[in-house]
Structure formats: C-alpha cells, structure tokens
Length: 206
Image 1 (cartoon, one colour):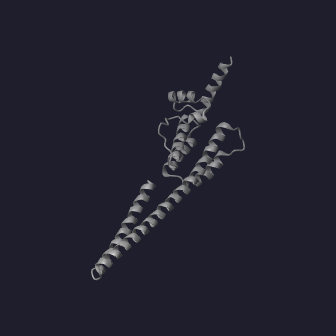
Image 2 (cartoon, rainbow, N blue to C red):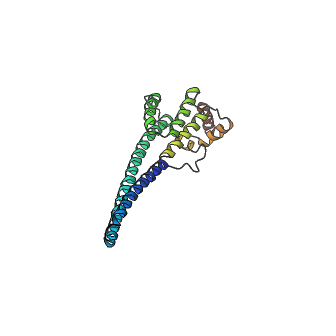
Image 3 (cartoon, rainbow, N blue to C red):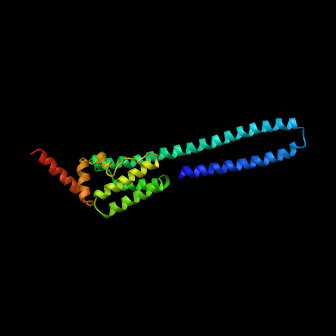
C-alpha cells in the first residue's frame, strides 16, 4: 500500500513538472514567433536538453530518497521483530527464571505502535487478548504464527507455501504430534501436549 501511495505521489509530481514545463514552452513559443527561425530551433533544442536532464536528476533523487527511507524503516522493523522472536525462543528453549515476558511485551508493544504495519498490530492484539483470556493452548500458538507471518509480510517476505502450523517445527519439540493433537482438539493446552510428550518419551524407553 505504501509503495502504491509513493508511486501516485511520484506521478503527481511528474504531472506538475510537465505542466510547468508546458507553460514555459508555450511562453517561449510565443516569443520565438518574433525571432529568427534558426535561432528559435537552436533555443528549443538546447532548452529541451536542459529540461530533460533536470527532470532526470530530480526524479532520480526523489526515488533515491524514497528507497533510503524504505530501507531505514525495514531495517528498524527487522530489529524490532527479531527482539520478539528472541523472547519467544527464550520462553520455549531456555529455563531463565529472570526473564520477564510481561515486562518485555509492555516495552515491545510501545515500539510497534510507531513502526509496525496495521496487520502486525492487529495480529499482536488478537494474540495478546487470547493469551490473557485462557492458558496457553493450540490456538495461542496459531495466533502467534499469524503474527510471525504478518511480520514477514511487513518486511517484504513471502508466506507462500507456509501452511498452518509450519512454524511449530521451529518451536515445538514434537511438531507433528502437536499438529495432530491440535487438529483433534483446537483448545488443547500446551501443558496437556507436554504431558502427552512425556508419556510417549517414557514409552520409548520401556
């Protein structure tokens, strides 16, 4: 959407510049009628070259500036989104009693107000509301996965061929088991899934 707006603004700017050039050329033609034809042709040729060169430089600088702004925004978004991913992996992989997820989210949501796209903010709100209403369950994970996908899309990455539950293979110890259990019971809690994993692990060693 942002690229479309930038493109429209660029066309408006170009149209305005063309209109100004038209007015200038019209005035020149009125003046050229009163001077020597050969001199008029030479002046028109020279003026056209200058105008085209000026337009090329101005538009080139404009697009260059847009690219710089987009690049800066993208880099900042990547940094902020990576902070969230680091916190998620800490929760699932590290036994860090000093890590305060609530405090982190309070600080992190302040950043996304200024930097995240509407789709990322909406996905985060949906995930946060569900997390506050019920213990972590399969739906909690899938809402978080929606947030992951919104982040990826916001920084220009494609989510094509990423089926529902694809990210469970990065987070869950037994991703296939999680997907099977969540399909049978969408409200199954992560604690219940963990208990099933322990039972299966025990059965393997007996």
